Image 1 (cartoon, helix red, strand yellow):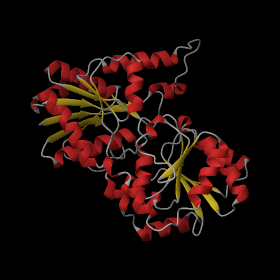
Image 2: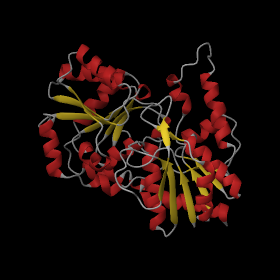
Image 3: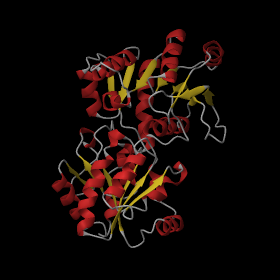
Image 4: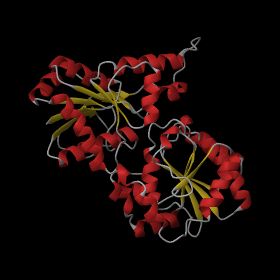
Length: 379
C-alpha cells in the first residue's frame, strides 16, 4: 500500500506523537509498504529523510515549542495526487491533520485518525476572558476532528471510553503505540558513567523523570514528595530530563525547598541519547494524569526501571503492582512505593523481568495492528 501520514510533530522532536508517527513509518516500511510523511518544517531537522515532506510552519499560538503548518494547498495537492495514496492516516488535529482530512476527502480515499491528546487536560493554556466553557470547547473540537475519519485509533481503553462519553459514534479501535524496545535494552555504559559523573549522581539512588516540563505533568507534586524522601535519605537525588514552560517555576520551587543540590534539571536532550538518560535512573517517577498511553512509562520499563507513578486509567495493562512498579494517589502511598521499590532495585533478574512485562508493545506488533485497519478499509 501507499500510505500518507500527516502530523504536526515528527522526528527529531521528542514527544509521544512524534515518536509514534516515526516508529509507525519504520514499522510499515519494514513490512513492505511505501510510507510518506507530511509534516512541518523543523529547524533541528538536520538531515533530509526519505519520503518526508516538510511544509512551511509557524509556532503554535498556545504551545510555542510546537509548530503548526500552513500548507500551500494547490502545490501540495498536486504532489499528494502524484503519490497515488491508498489511505491517509492523520496523527494530529490542527494544520497537517486538517490538511490530511481535506486531502482524503478530495481524493475519496480512506481516512484513519489517531487520537493522541486529551485536550481537556491542556485547556489551561488557552485564556478566554469571560468564557468558562473551555472544556466543552475541547469536547466539541474533538468531535469535529473525529467525525470525518473512517476509523479512529486510540492507544488505550481509557481514551476509547472518553471518546464514547463525547458521543463520538465512530469505529474506534484500541491499538497501543509501540516502541522500539531494543533501543532501551542496551544503553552505552561509558556514556552513562560519564553522565553520572557530570551530574554528580554516582553511588546515589536516582529518581528520574523524562518528558515534557509542563503544568499538566504535575511535577510540582513530585518535588514535594521528593522533599519528604530526602529528609529521610540524603543519598537520593531527583533528575528531571526535558524542557517546557514550567521549567523555571520548578527550579524556583527547588530553591525554595532548599533542594537545588538534590534536584537536577538536564534540559532537553537528543532523542538519540535518551536511552542513556533512562539508564542513569533507578526508579522512574511521574504524577501526570493527562497521559493517553504514557509512552515514557513504557520506555522506562523497557529500560528495566520500575515505575512509581500516580494512578491513571492508562496504566491498565502496563503496570503490575509490586512487580514492575507501584502506583499512588496520596503522599503516604508515594513514600510507601518509594521504600518498597528502593528495596528491590538490586534484586537479581529484576531488570529482565521488568523488560519482559512490556514485550507486547513491540513496534512490529503495533505496525501489524495498524496495517489490519488499513486493509479493512482498502480491501
